[in-house]
Length: 534
Image (cartoon, rainbow, N blue to C red; front, side, top):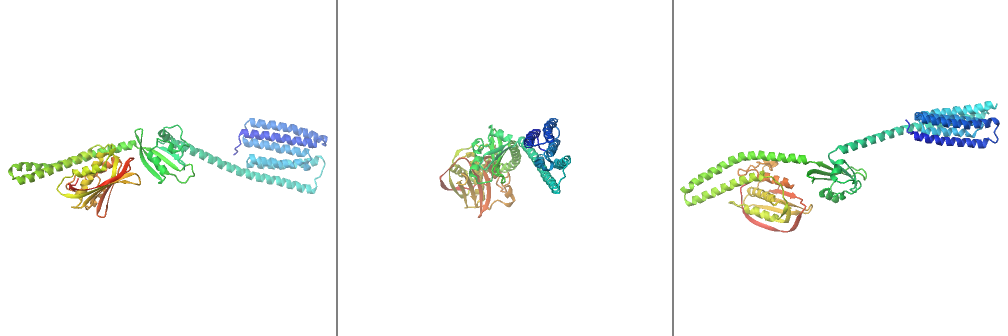
């Protein structure tokens, strides 16, 4: 294998031609004044032969022979020309013997090991033939020490040839490995480009200073800009503010949020890459989840329809008994005394409230939830929920609210407070205290609401499904109260949790809105009638 191009071979030929004619010029300048007629004739023949060799090598290059053959011909002609020069300039006493070593070294640099070995052997043979031919022509006998010196010189030439052949073999191996690595790198680059271009998910690579180093076509379309390589991610204003805030804080290694862009919903994820220098430290991905969101919404609607079917069946059963009770009570109004009439009126009133609650729960659960945030006062919403409660027993309800204003949907907040308060009052034994906490969260500038009761807690049998429709085991409940709370929290992206601690049951709602104003707040303690479980 040879990595030399024709242009490199041509440059090598020009350099060698210049060097060869320079050597011949030196030989003419040194030997021509004192040379014999035969030596002068030999020197002029060598000059002509050098011209012929140069022309021949040019023809070889022009005919586009293999690079190995071209190098072998060039250095073989060099060895022959040096042998003739040694013969003309004194044989064993010629100072141009060193040129054989230069030819071998040059051949080892440019050719492979076999060519080096051939040229080395050819140089040794040419040298020996030149020396012995000169001695034979001039009737000289080489002295014994000359023979030993000649053998030493030939051994040195062969040793140099062997070393250069080993180096050439090593060079060929390294060249092959380098070519293999380069091809593999090119294939990986091609595959990387194909994969990145074909991906529908957007990908952006950032360095340790949050400068954009690479991105694919999908991310390019999302960024809506021509070129962002080398720019800071903070200069791309189209990216979600939550993502940029995550990079500015630099506290966590992973981030995930949903991003609404051009009427499409994207799942944005950011993660720190394994240690890889400074060029690739962060990976951003943008996955279009609009279709999944649409399917999820359709599934929720189907679940609602199924729940409505179950609700209709339950209502048919639940409405029968109150209607029968009220019908019987109306028939008795004219036949009983005044005190009994008041008792019958109270029963009818309670049954009407019960029916109204059943219908309200069904409507609240099946109503489409589209959050419409606006400035609202949580204390007023809590007070309205407390004022609505009106039944025959009393519990002490304590409200601790330290948030004056928040940017949320007030109707959705009212639904949550109504259902959680109703469940807490039903679960708490008399006269246990129900506590409602509403306060700002200092760690993420959001708010948190807790409704605490002192009841027996959620039964183990429904604890895992407490937020599903009809999960209630209470005989007076519809099983839609907590399901409605879960649905409202999901629509508003609020976190909903429940746990039990110190004989108290906690329902916690938490959110991190963009606008929350923290004030001094107020403390409200009131007595509220107990209402049936929702």
